[in-house]
Length: 116
Image (cartoon, rainbow, N blue to C red; front, side):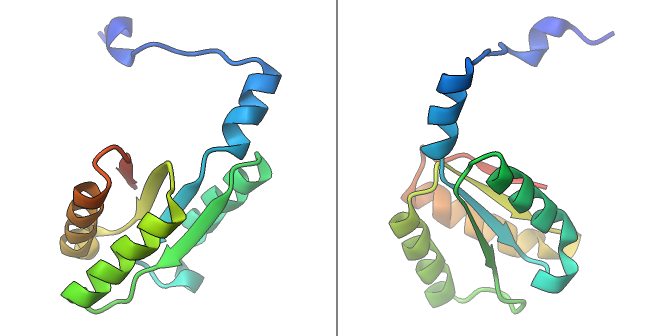
C-alpha cells in the first residue's frame, strides 16, 4: 500500500498568491519531436499559457546535437532565465535529452528539468 507520507507536502495558495506565482514563473518547453507531430507539448504549453504562465517552446534539431548547438541552447536558456524546463522526448531521443539536461544543469544547477 502507498504510504501518504511519501507524496510530500502539499502547499495551498490563495488566489492572489497563485496569480503572483504564475506571472513570475517562466517555463521553457523543449521538444525533440518535430513541432507538427508533438500535440502533447502543444496541449501542455496552451494549458500553462491559459493559466497565466509565460511559456516558451523550442524544437531541438533532429540530428545529434553538436557542441556548438548545445552551447547555443544553453545560451538561449541563460538569456531566457526559465524557472523550470520541460522536455518532450521518446526513447530514440534519450542521448540528446541526456546531453541537453547535463549542459543545462551545469549552467543552471538550481533549475529543475522534467522529462515526459
